[in-house]
Image (tube, rainbow, N blue to C red; front, side, top):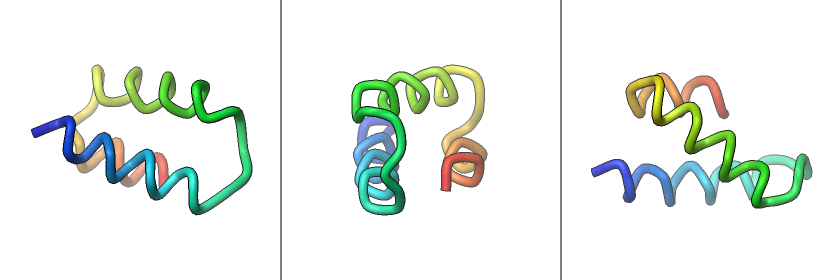
Length: 46
């Protein structure tokens, strides 16, 4: 359930901006998903 959405979030983030290194983005996604429902994480990270 979360794994599928996690992949989508990674894909969106890597396409949408040049930000921190990919590993840092993954850490942020993991932290957010640990504390928020998936739809809130998606809203915050887009």
